[in-house]
Image 1: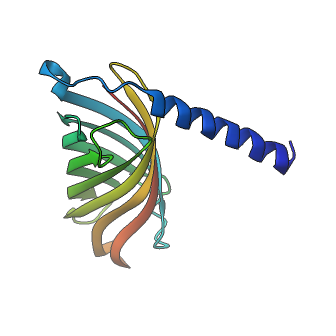
Image 2: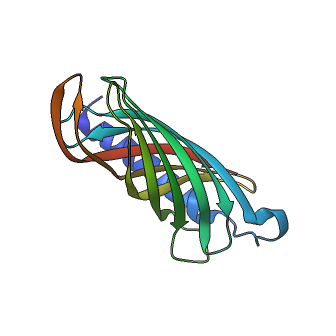
Length: 182
């Protein structure tokens, strides 16, 4: 497929997604409809050259209304793909499109603490932050599918692993998440 055909197909797909998201009806949220939960799968690319890129799984639950898509808490498992290091962020989550009507784009902010489980080293509990921008892919009466691109900060500090010193001033990563909420 040539570049011109690929770009044409991509523009057509994005136009379809934008039209279907903007046509979504704005149902009034009441009763049990204020409860929201969701799950995500994704990955993060290490931007600090520490070989700590990861595969991520997360889940959250909380409250929603016409302005907030999610206002709640969540937890995540970040499994580093090149070593046995694991990180377990526990965070508060706020997701909104800054409007009371459904929109195509939204902002997601997560902040909390991350429990770093490092091979043959002392565990570290540090600051966790993750702002992201998302796009609604599909929306129904009881679900919403989306994709998010963002940044992730893990406050991991310098440490010794197997008598070897690793200098770190936090772990910075670019992340991609694919999720669904109910």
